[in-house]
Image (cartoon, rainbow, N blue to C red; front, side, top):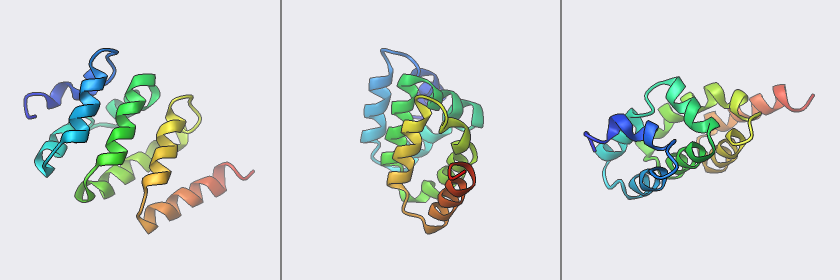
Length: 122
C-alpha cells in the first residue's frame, strides 16, 4: 500500500485502473492501509479533480462508503469545504448525495443543513 499510495488518486482517473482502485478501497483491511489510500488524496486539488471526473467520482464514493471511523471527521471537514462547488457539477453531485447519505455525525449534518438552507432554499 505504501508503494501504491502516491499513484492512487492519479489511477482513479484512469479508465482501466479505477476499478482496481475501488476494489482496493473495499478490501483495505487495516487502518494503516486506509491511511495510505487517503494520503493519495492529501490535498484539495487531488480530491477535487477526482470528484469532478466521471470515473474519479466513483472512487470518492467508495471512500465515503468504506472510510473507517477514525478518519471520518477529518474527511468530513475536507469534503464539506468544497461541497458547494461540486454539488453544482454533473458528477460531483453524486459524491454529495453519497456523503449526505453516509454521514452519521450530528455536527456535519448541521453543517450540511446550514449549507442547504443558505444556498438552495432561495
